[in-house]
Length: 149
Image (cartoon, rainbow, N blue to C red; front, side):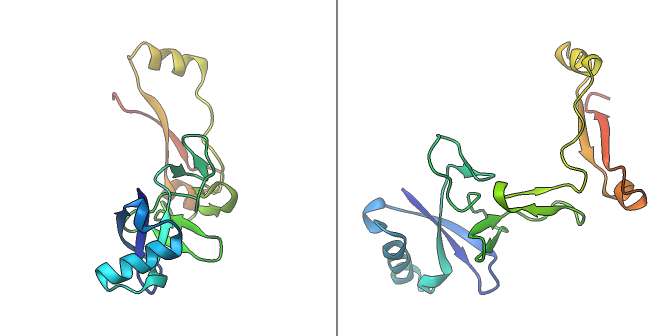
């Protein structure tokens, strides 16, 4: 099956349709088929890969268009990437990995004690982004929380 995102004139993904491979031997053939079936202009159908996320193919193949498209995503024609919604105002696009990144990068690693508590299932430590904390002090933002608390 080939998958195609139906996008609006302002590049928002409206829906994603599966198309039998025989009707989508090429992206252009799939676009023509979908225009004929749905009446939506061919140029507003973009092929997407079910197996691509963060510019990685989960089966080891070639990643295609950064991320599998989903309703609410945005089509970035310049970079040919489907982007999920921006999670926080301070986060920016990492084009090479097709993902949003915090201004402070990845969260810190858990300490050995926190990892041991997670393994013992007494705690569930993880970091969450706190945009308010970052806006108040741009050296902070990642907050350690316990899901079991």
